[in-house]
Image (cartoon, rainbow, N blue to C red; front, side, top):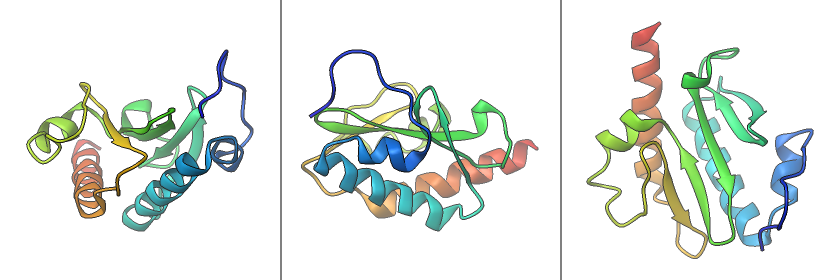
Length: 128
């Protein structure tokens, strides 16, 4: 279950993941693995006290993909343009402008996430 009160400061991504529920840990580890599979050069950092991946090591915040654990879902933040591009395929999930919620009680859509990651990486590379 998610903790109440202010979010603690974590030293590492492992610390963040270890502090979550077993269900959230499983999904966070799975999502992290997918990100590292598609973007092996991604730099792991904590930003806004949550796990982030700099697609371009040392890159700007707009070049990050983030994930965060909540009581019933994992928030995945690949950037608004990615959500817009894959909006139709994400129709069964709750979405925000730049985020999607993956429920803890459902399998991750791995192939869709991989395509989203490839899209976002190519989008960033075109901009630099």
